Amino acid sequence: MKAVLSFCLICLFFVGNAQSNLDPVKWTFGSEKVGDNKYKITFTATIEDGWAVYSQFIEDGGPIPTTFNFDENTDIELKDGVVEPEDKETKYDEMFEMDLIKVKGKAEFYQMVSVKSEDQVLKGFLTYMACDDSKCLPPSDVNFEITIE
Image (cartoon, rainbow, N blue to C red; front, side):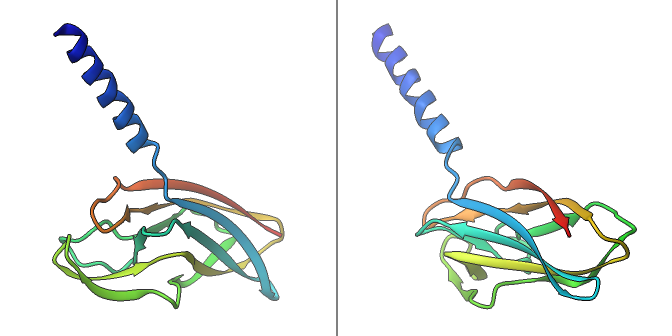
């Protein structure tokens, strides 16, 4: 009996670790010069098939929205807000029982900035939540450090 119980506990440990190591979203970051002292900062999510991340604009009671948090840098001025991908979809979600805005596949968010001097570094973190049709992973924070040259 003890052997069966030990085996079950070991299986639960490995299943729990496999679940916690599940990461269906990979983030990359970049910057592109678009004018004199003006740059487009990109946050690109590559999302595995069957999974989605959510808009910044989610009502209370739904999943955790994607959020972008920037460290203060007096040499970098953020323009407007973070722009979401154009190919997002809005539809009713059975799990949350509400209309939600989701992005799937490859999704590029971007922030326009202007810089006061060259060779700046934009630091911060983003928070997102990934879900498929039956489950959601806990929210994740991803640090970024983007060199603006």
